[in-house]
Image (cartoon, rainbow, N blue to C red; front, side):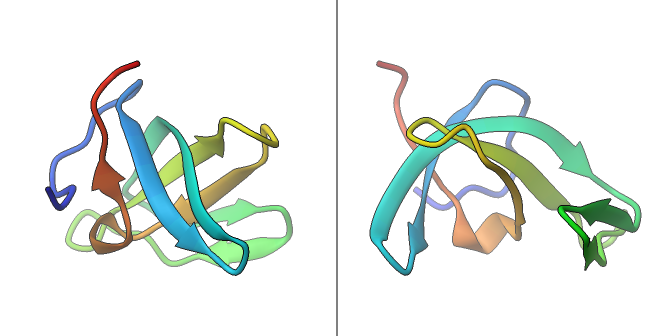
Length: 73
């Protein structure tokens, strides 16, 4: 199922150069934000989600269409 409306704590998966990664939604981004030195061009019309990897604990922003909602463990 494609993730269109996610909320904090939702478990999601996404593709990385190393393959699929799972993690959880930290928050919905609706304004320009800087993450690890990168500018995220999020807006209310085009929100992105800040997610935290279960494996590494690293945080990154992703567009909703890049995330797939997973069931809770």
